[in-house]
Length: 411
Image (tube, one colour):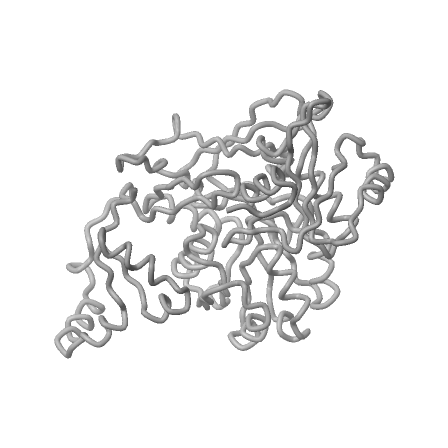
């Protein structure tokens, strides 16, 4: 779809990822260059040219406009087919400046980024932000190496860690106290930060704020984030400067609305199969999320429009049902989907890796906090592992298919 003609890669990466079949397929539509081969071909003349271009870069810089495409990234596909998002040079630079205006950053700090750059959070916050603000950055190729990353945080004197709630929780459980204690703060995106993670970091490593943020690929990606000096649990933080917002009412949901955003950081548009770009209508991007906003522009996510079910005529948040399961079984991972029900319209199904989870315990907790019984999943499917995407997000498409087959994985 993107019309890519050249692929730059490395032989070691292909070996470790076992991607030989993919490379064979790509060879029919693009030229694949291995960086090891490029390195071997660099000669003395190339080095002289590079030195000169570094001293006087002006004549050698490619001509580009702010509106030119900077990157094309595909959305995670956690709720459906991934979409190609075209982000302009201006989108990316604007979002970096918005973040830097919202949180005071010290050029002497060190950013540690284990998130992949095919994920916009990893690209903008983990790579472009330190480059454009003068910070050092340590890039690690995978967040999955739980036991390797904590010692590296200490060794590189990291000041900021970017990750998701799932990964931060894992690092905190295996890390020695002095391996994370040098951090100024941690920034989490892509999924809700659990109270358990906040508490675990505070108990084991002291006063290190875990800042929950919010964004989407279409916004390059950051829309809101908490501050080290103003960290409000349960929210995704304050709206970044330069972003317009509007809320549209959603039937059956009180206290919030469907969230639309507009600003210099909002994408050029979605990539279409014919290679053209479909811009957002009048610049407004429909996030698909239902949120509430305080008078000082602090945002709380109530759920996705797709993440509400109509049970017995009432709108029920699947995210709230997941939160209840997390409160009862904090050591487990939980996900809730909705299925058709002949009596009540829809019913909630809880997937969990907590093998002793049972509906009666969940119902008792709901009653203790005053939650309606309709919001409690009556069916629980215990599985070995809740499926996730490469970004760490829950794979709801896979779970929906599993729900249709009573918990069995299908291709």
